[in-house]
Length: 569
Image 1 (cartoon, rainbow, N blue to C red):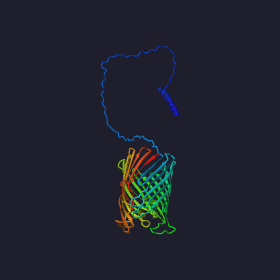
Image 2 (image 1 turned 45 degrees about the horizontal axis):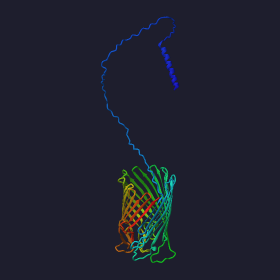
Image 3 (image 1 turned 135 degrees about the horizontal axis):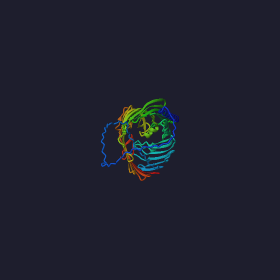
Image 4 (image 1 turned 180 degrees about the vertical axis):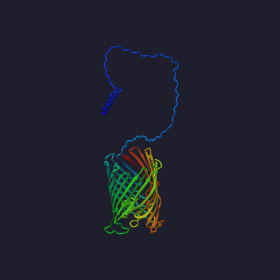
């Protein structure tokens, strides 16, 4: 830049010299010396005389302008900005270490429960729990119907940066009696009809919580239970469950894998009036279920869809493979109504433990068969009418092979023990749930289901009601008085009998059907909280005192009133 500037100055200088030369063709230099007078003529001046102005106002200059109206279209559009929100986090409530609960009820029914756990920690969590409840009751016209339940468990959970590990152990013992006989014409000592189930188990589980969408999230568990009763029936069960998922773009790819091994052994029962042959014969059944369920999930702002396939292997004396669809789709209309549709299926284990948990009056020697749901097609709509009322309504159609049904045995008992049989059937279910939830003050719910059964071999679906309705709620009055209430209604059922009973209907296989009346059970409970540490409760169970039969020949207790207190520390 300096170089250009210097050149420019030089050019201007040259042009000035050239211009000077162009004024005269000849330059003459003269030097003169002399004396003289120089006279400067005076400048002519104009005479001005000031004048006085009488009117100092200024006249308005009128002008006219021509305006043209023109509107330019603007492409700028304003977008609304959400108002800033100040997130206020309430201080965390102070945790309690645990509680002790105790009470006593009718029929000499004591209740004791203890729970103790750790406080908040970023590294670990642990707790222990124990509970005992029993009843020394006798129902008029039946055998001794006393029962007991004992539970003890402990867990420990450790948190790492991206996953957690949990270990737990538990022990359960439940006792009952085979009281389903007429005590007026049959006398049996209560020790001869006593049954007790023991369960010892433990499980280790782990789960990741990685927030990076590209990483694989996983969870799994390995559990073992040993289950046995008073009559030399025992069961060992090992269950391994693993699952993993990964997000790729907008899709989530996942797979579930599981192995369920079960070993059941029992002593072959002795028919009534028979003679023992030594040594006693032992029946042992081993069964393994293996499942692999891959699936893909994708979703948008208003919709969700999952597609998968269930692959199951049933390993017994021979191995059989089963394949099931696994798909679901739903769409949200303004977050109020969410219609959905889906189809699934699978194998479900029927073990000695699962059957006796449902019906504790079973024989110790039972046949085990898994339930095969070939398909379950369902459709419905769920949503919320307001921020307090939510609902879900659904219709389902399923095909089930090996559904467990119970009936009274006469080979190894006097009908006071029950056996299990399996039947295939088509089932159509109509169900609905409605809930009213007013935060911590009032919560009311209604669940209802009606089923249409089409059994393949049996006359009826024994001891299974078509109509099932539950109504319940909880009301909190100023965080001082808590009122709980629930009511159950189960429709009429049919019970299968191998012997004739007055009023029974004859079945095609020369057995008999007995009508069981509907079940109506209403419970009511009150809790008074003296402060955050001490409270008292009073519960009324089966308040209308209906001695309905849950199973044929097994009526339940009438009204039972229990009261007690809870101490939190």
